[in-house]
Image 1 (tube, rainbow, N blue to C red):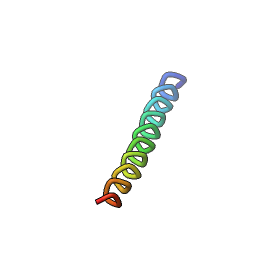
Image 2 (cartoon, helix red, strand yellow; image 1 turned 30 degrees about the horizontal axis):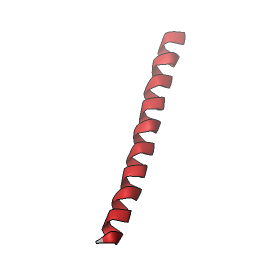
Image 3 (tube, rainbow, N blue to C red; image 1 turned 90 degrees about the vertical axis):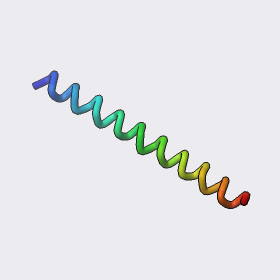
Image 4 (cartoon, helix red, strand yellow; image 1 turned 180 degrees about the horizontal axis):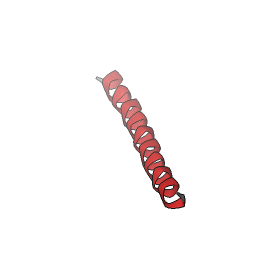
Length: 36
């Protein structure tokens, strides 16, 4: 049970990090588009 929870926590954490990274790269991409 604890191991399963730990695994779920790690997956959730990595998904949050990925979505945060995607959001930041999208913002940077939008800035690049505005420059053009």
